Length: 113
Length: 116
Image 1: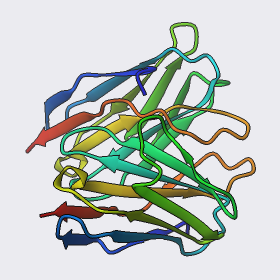
Image 2: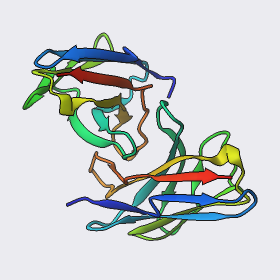
Image 3: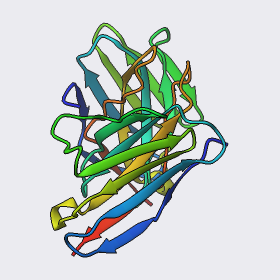
Image 4: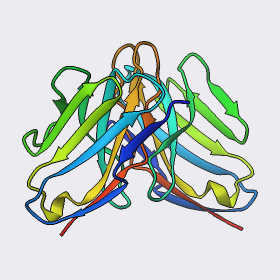
């Protein structure tokens, strides 16, 4: 898990603002780059994921930007809502038959109304 | 679809007793299941990987004799915390994947274990 560095540790954003979370990795074998959302007392749930053959993927208000040469990927939450207040984890994994996720330390996002 | 359940959702036990946590994939067959533990305000730490019908693979530092994992069928894996102690109190989360070319792991809702 130390292969993945996630930042910031926490952030506070106003409703309607943009939240940006970054993830840097070392393992060049990673082939799948997901972001998970976790609410207190619940298990994480897949939010959005990207493969390395594209540089950006957007699903609704959530966008992943991927920079293969820099070994970084980020999550952008547009028009942040109070319901987005949660902890977000990047958790890349190798492809093929290796399903182990390498979780980042997590980012707690608080959206103020 | 792709629902994973855990039972119980929370459990309190006395020090020295054993606790079993079940993880079930409700609408798919899980070739591989994972067990994680999560301490407050920390990330998920992988404890072990289990494949149906074979012994679990434990991560470094995880005591296999203390955390017994059984993946008896394609829809059920169990984690037994033996001789539990207060330091074993944590949030235990399982995940499951159908395997093959499927990328996603589906996570259970977690089990809160408190050892008195």
